[in-house]
Amino acid sequence: MFYPGDSIQGFTIIRQLGKGGMGEVYLGEDAHLARKVAIKELSSALGSDESFTQRFKHEAQLQARLSHPNIVSLYSFFEEGGRYYMVLEYAEGITLRDLIRQTGPVPYQRATTIIRQVLEALEYAHRQKIIHRDIKPVNIIVGANDQVKILDFGISKIMGERGLTGTGQMLGTVNYMSPEQVKALKDIDGRSDLYSLGVTFFEVLSGRLPYDTLTDSDYEIMNQIVQAPMPDPRSYYPGIPEKTVAILFKMLAKDRDERYSSAWEVMQDFEAPVVSMPVQAETPARMVDPRPQPQIEVPANAWAPGDIKNYMTQAILVTLFCFIPTGIPAIVNASRVNGLIATGRVDEAMAASKKAHNWIISSLVINLSFWVFGIIMSIITQ
Image 1 (cartoon, helix red, strand yellow):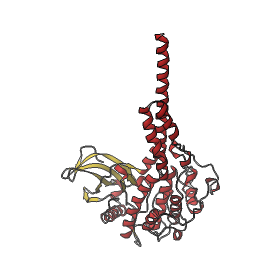
Image 2: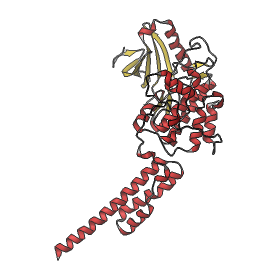
Image 3: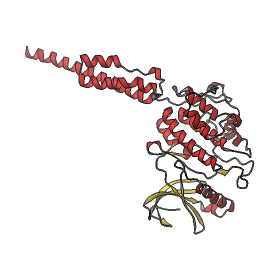
Image 4: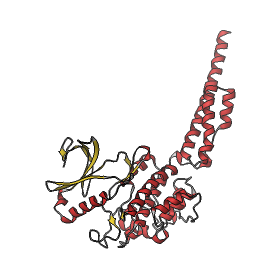
C-alpha cells in the first residue's frame, strides 16, 4: 500500500483513487514529464497466484494494443519487489454513474454525444479483435466538454482466444451483462459490448436500469436479462425521440443476430435521418417480475416539449406597457424557446422559458412598484 508522497519508479503518489478485488489504483505524478498518471497495483494477496499474475499481464498487453482518444492509454508496466504495476493515462472527470446520480436522466442530445464516443472506441477495439466485456457507467469517464474515456480492459478478451477465460465463466457486472454472457456462451463477440452499452444508454436516458434490481438474487436479474421484455425509457423520461428509442432497442435485442452487428452500424443509424426498425417496448407492468418497479423522481427538465411555454405575448406586453429594461430580456429568452424545442434541446428550452417567465414577473413587480410609489408621493404632496 502507498501513502501520499511515496515514490516508485520515478512516480510520486498523490492519493488513492480506488480499491477493488484485484488491487489498488493510485493517482500519481510522473516526475520527469510533469503529468498525472493512474498507477494500478496488483494486490499482494493475488501476486503469488500465477493465474492472477497472468491475467494482470494479459490486461496490460491488451491495453498496450489500444491507442484511441476515447480509451485510456497504457504508459508503462513493471514489476518491483515481487509486485506488478501498470501506469495508465489519468482520465480527469467523473464516472458516467456519478453523472447520472448528479443529474438524473441525461437529456438525449447529451446522452447521444457520450454514447457515440463509446461506440467509436468500441468500433476501434473490435477491429483489433478485442472485446471489453464489462461496459458499464462506472467504467466510462466523462471529462471536460463531455470528452469520454473508457477504463478497465481487465477482463477483455481477444475474439476467439482461449485459456484465461474458459467456457462457463461469467465475467462482468450482472446488471449490464448480455443474454449470451448470462448463458455463458463460449463465442462472445463485439455484439455483447453493444448490448451492455445499450443497457448503459437506457440508464443514461431514463435515470434507471431496465431491470428490477430490488433483489439480492443475481439469478432473478439474469432471468430478466434473458426473458423479460424491455420497458420503454419514455415511461420514465418523456420527450426521447422515436429514432433514439429505435436505436436503443436494436442494441438491446435479446437475440444477438437481431442486434447491430457492429458499433459502426449503430453510428450510421445515429447519422441517418430516419430509423426504419420498429420500436417494440413493453411497459414495466408487463415485465416478468411482477413486483413494483423502483421509482425515480423525474426532474422538472423531463417535461415533454409540448408542455413548455414561450411566453412571447406576455413578454411583448410587459415591454410595451411595463418596464423596457426587463421586458427586452423576456423577449430574447421567449424567442429562443421554439427554436430550441425544434432542435430537440428540451432542457435548454425549459431554461429559456423559465428565464422569460422570471423577467416578465420582474417587469410586473417593478411596474407595480412605480405605480405604488407614484400614488404614495401624490398623497404626500397634496
